[in-house]
Length: 121
Image 1 (cartoon, rainbow, N blue to C red):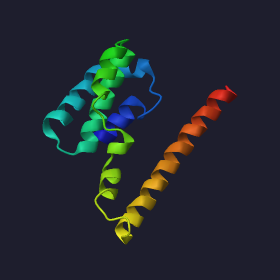
Image 2: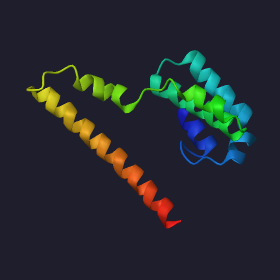
Image 3: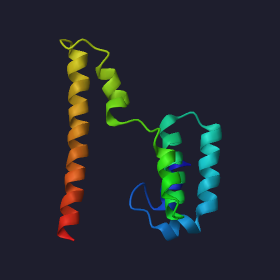
Image 4: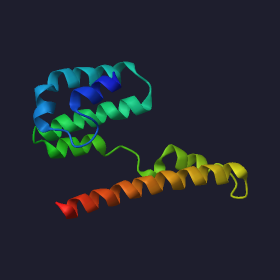
Protein backbone atom coordinates (compact mmCIF):
# COMPACT_ATOMS: atom_id res chain seq x y z
CA UNK A 1 0.00 0.00 0.00
CA UNK A 2 2.87 2.34 0.78
CA UNK A 3 4.26 1.82 -2.72
CA UNK A 4 0.83 2.48 -4.20
CA UNK A 5 0.59 5.73 -2.22
CA UNK A 6 3.99 6.72 -3.57
CA UNK A 7 2.74 6.10 -7.12
CA UNK A 8 -0.66 7.74 -6.53
CA UNK A 9 0.79 10.93 -5.06
CA UNK A 10 3.79 11.28 -7.34
CA UNK A 11 6.38 10.48 -4.68
CA UNK A 12 7.35 11.58 -1.22
CA UNK A 13 8.60 15.05 -2.22
CA UNK A 14 7.54 17.90 -4.48
CA UNK A 15 3.98 16.65 -4.87
CA UNK A 16 1.64 18.43 -7.25
CA UNK A 17 -1.23 19.83 -5.13
CA UNK A 18 -3.68 19.17 -7.98
CA UNK A 19 -2.73 15.49 -8.05
CA UNK A 20 -3.06 15.26 -4.28
CA UNK A 21 -6.48 16.89 -4.26
CA UNK A 22 -7.72 14.86 -7.25
CA UNK A 23 -6.84 11.66 -5.35
CA UNK A 24 -7.61 12.97 -1.87
CA UNK A 25 -10.35 10.51 -0.92
CA UNK A 26 -8.37 7.45 -1.99
CA UNK A 27 -5.16 8.74 -0.35
CA UNK A 28 -6.92 9.42 2.95
CA UNK A 29 -8.71 6.04 2.84
CA UNK A 30 -5.41 4.20 2.35
CA UNK A 31 -3.62 6.28 4.99
CA UNK A 32 -6.37 5.61 7.52
CA UNK A 33 -6.21 1.90 6.73
CA UNK A 34 -2.45 1.87 7.28
CA UNK A 35 -2.79 3.81 10.53
CA UNK A 36 -5.59 1.54 11.77
CA UNK A 37 -4.20 -1.82 10.68
CA UNK A 38 -0.44 -1.60 10.27
CA UNK A 39 2.20 -1.62 12.98
CA UNK A 40 5.21 -1.01 10.72
CA UNK A 41 6.38 2.40 11.87
CA UNK A 42 7.87 3.57 8.57
CA UNK A 43 4.59 2.93 6.76
CA UNK A 44 2.69 4.69 9.52
CA UNK A 45 4.99 7.72 9.30
CA UNK A 46 4.53 7.82 5.53
CA UNK A 47 0.75 7.68 5.97
CA UNK A 48 0.86 10.63 8.37
CA UNK A 49 3.11 12.47 5.91
CA UNK A 50 0.68 11.95 3.04
CA UNK A 51 -2.22 13.12 5.19
CA UNK A 52 -0.24 16.25 6.03
CA UNK A 53 0.42 16.79 2.31
CA UNK A 54 -3.34 16.65 1.63
CA UNK A 55 -3.97 19.23 4.36
CA UNK A 56 -1.22 21.44 2.99
CA UNK A 57 -2.64 21.17 -0.56
CA UNK A 58 -5.99 22.27 0.88
CA UNK A 59 -4.33 25.39 2.29
CA UNK A 60 -4.40 24.08 5.87
CA UNK A 61 -0.72 24.63 6.62
CA UNK A 62 -1.10 24.79 10.42
CA UNK A 63 -3.02 21.50 10.49
CA UNK A 64 -0.39 19.87 8.28
CA UNK A 65 2.42 21.08 10.53
CA UNK A 66 0.55 19.86 13.62
CA UNK A 67 0.46 16.32 12.18
CA UNK A 68 4.21 16.36 11.64
CA UNK A 69 5.23 17.92 14.97
CA UNK A 70 5.53 14.54 16.69
CA UNK A 71 8.00 13.12 14.18
CA UNK A 72 11.42 12.44 15.67
CA UNK A 73 14.35 14.67 14.87
CA UNK A 74 17.59 13.24 13.49
CA UNK A 75 18.92 13.17 17.04
CA UNK A 76 16.06 10.87 18.03
CA UNK A 77 16.44 8.52 15.07
CA UNK A 78 16.85 4.80 15.55
CA UNK A 79 20.50 4.70 14.52
CA UNK A 80 21.40 7.62 16.75
CA UNK A 81 19.81 5.82 19.71
CA UNK A 82 21.53 2.53 18.81
CA UNK A 83 24.85 4.37 18.71
CA UNK A 84 24.23 5.54 22.27
CA UNK A 85 23.86 1.96 23.50
CA UNK A 86 27.47 0.93 22.84
CA UNK A 87 30.64 1.90 24.67
CA UNK A 88 32.73 4.33 22.64
CA UNK A 89 35.67 1.96 22.49
CA UNK A 90 33.69 -0.91 20.90
CA UNK A 91 33.60 -2.03 17.29
CA UNK A 92 29.79 -1.93 17.33
CA UNK A 93 29.91 1.74 18.33
CA UNK A 94 32.37 2.46 15.52
CA UNK A 95 30.20 0.60 12.97
CA UNK A 96 26.97 2.41 13.85
CA UNK A 97 28.83 5.73 14.14
CA UNK A 98 30.19 5.21 10.63
CA UNK A 99 26.72 4.32 9.36
CA UNK A 100 25.29 7.46 11.01
CA UNK A 101 28.01 9.63 9.49
CA UNK A 102 27.29 8.23 6.01
CA UNK A 103 23.58 8.83 6.46
CA UNK A 104 24.14 12.34 7.78
CA UNK A 105 26.58 13.11 4.95
CA UNK A 106 24.05 11.95 2.35
CA UNK A 107 21.38 14.06 4.04
CA UNK A 108 23.59 17.16 4.05
CA UNK A 109 24.64 16.56 0.43
CA UNK A 110 20.98 16.36 -0.58
CA UNK A 111 20.19 19.62 1.23
CA UNK A 112 23.19 21.37 -0.33
CA UNK A 113 22.07 20.12 -3.74
CA UNK A 114 18.62 21.60 -3.11
CA UNK A 115 20.20 24.94 -2.23
CA UNK A 116 22.26 24.95 -5.42
CA UNK A 117 19.16 24.15 -7.48
CA UNK A 118 17.33 27.07 -5.82
CA UNK A 119 20.26 29.41 -6.53
CA UNK A 120 20.38 28.29 -10.16
CA UNK A 121 16.68 28.99 -10.69
